[in-house]
Amino acid sequence: MTLISMFEQSVQKYGNKPALAHKPKGGTYLDISYAEFGESVDAFSKGLNVLGVQKGDRIAILSENRPEWAISDFGILKAGAVNVPMFSTLTAAQVGYILKDSGAKIICVSTKDQLEKVIAIRDKVPSLEQIIIFDSIEGKSPESVLEFERICHRGKEADALEEDETDKDDIATIIYTSGTTGNPKGVMLTHANFLSNFNACKTLIDVGETDVLLSFLPLSHVFERLGGHYVPMFSGAKIAYAESTFTVAQNMQEVSPTVMLSVPRLYETMHDRVLRAVQAGSSLKQKIFHWGVSVGSAVSSKIQQGKKPSALLQLQQGIADKLVFAKLKAATGGQLRFFVSGGAALPQSIAEFFHAAGILILEGYGLTETSPVISLNHPEKWKFGTVGAPIPGIEVQIAEDGEILTRGPHVMKGYFNNEDATVEVIDGEGWFHTGDIGIIDDDGFIKITDRKKNIIVLSNGKNVAPQPIESELVQSPFIDQIMLVGNERKNVAALIVPNFDALKSWASENSVDTSDIPEMLKTREVQQLIQSEIRERLTDFADFEQVRRFVLLEKEFSQEEDEMTPTLKLKRNVIFEKYSDVIEGMYPEEA
Image 1 (cartoon, rainbow, N blue to C red):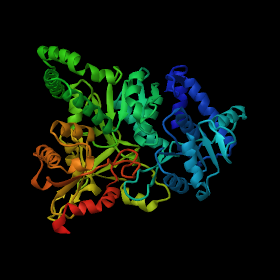
Image 2 (image 1 turned 90 degrees about the vertical axis):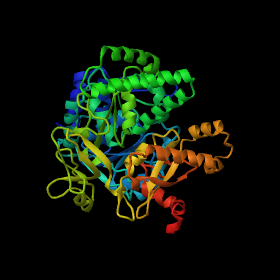
Image 3 (image 1 turned 60 degrees about the horizontal axis):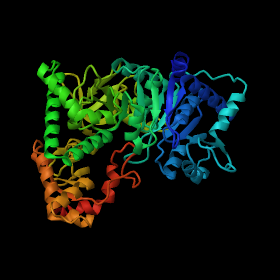
Image 4 (image 1 turned 135 degrees about the vertical axis):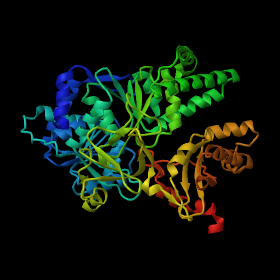
């Protein structure tokens, strides 16, 4: 089996059932059936053949999530070519690097803005022959730029072409890693890589014809590519595309998803909004809320122990659900079966809060190089604070230094044009070295402690894993983002981006002037507030893990400033260099 044969089976099996849904600007959601989807894929594939695309050619996609992305993906694969997806937030220079490194022959772009990025660097990419744009172009098209619809039209009129036989071990995609350090590397994933992951995940999580998924994580990211694209497509489910990351809340109401994938940031934002609304309410509403959470937590605890809640507790749960949690569930569209979290660590307290509210978040773990899933919590077996047990058909072990190693059909073919980098991560016995530090508990669940390269080694030799500390501190209503520092220093310090809305509200209530934000952050009252939050939330951490110093930053970390990857991970090296003077200022005695 290949991704294409699986797709064609779905087209034949599900026919007129809706496969995709999208919302035109100013309109309402429109469905595209499996049959219509299949026809578009066939037309685009033949159109690529007309352009001279041959087996093994690399074709890039630079686009937001939309039907044309999905059509292009399967059309590229059906033509025997290799899909090279790119995040729509990349700069022209970053796009140029990937195009040149991959030797892309064609690139598909979504909009005029994305087209301008490619035009700006196309002279530096000798392999690039053609640009295809999804949107219509007003007036005369730039040279070598063709509209997507025109390609599909050409394909429909073309004579039947003899298709190259695609093998399961052929490369399906080259996905470039986010690049938190250095240039991104092209991860080569085969049809077999994806299908092994799909088959393993399907045995754990049942997604079927009645399911609706709201897709908003970038399809260029392997997490969404498998879980929000291939899994539902091969299961007869419906995929609805969010208009943007800013309209997810509204689109959830319109689409009523039954399953949804996200990075932890969405769940943290939803949690913060709930708490802010509660804090703004009366004391009676606050008491009812906290009572509801305590009831939900008690029910959650019983379920986690494999026990049935008592009749009284079930009665209380029903009341709490109506009084406290009904609005939260309605905000998700009211039909949600579960969330899936990946891409970064989900704070355990967030998972526990949502489960108390009757919403299950299933956290998994993997990397681009493992296509992507290594372990997964699922509805029949889950444990908060872990990333689940290894999926069927693969091996996982912990190395002597604590690094997680994995071996199996999910491991990539290698890095494109980079054998040295491949050898660094896949050893002679086929074990892929993840770079993550973790443990496997007595129940077989994996717990991640941090990235190996992120470990802070203090001058006294103590090792500090920043992730658990950062995850704990961002639970403060006054802390939005945080990055720990302290490598080769006496103690740990932190760069902190406050939650400005919550902080300004607190400052106003405590007679602190909020007219000048930079000055407000320096006030003794605000400094003491953050210090007390740090002290209270790190009581269970060792003395050497305590954050002794911090600086409050005036601006949040962002992709636009190249401080975060498209998957919202901190580019620690970039931030460290950018704020080197600030960091040095926290260690005056060591200067």
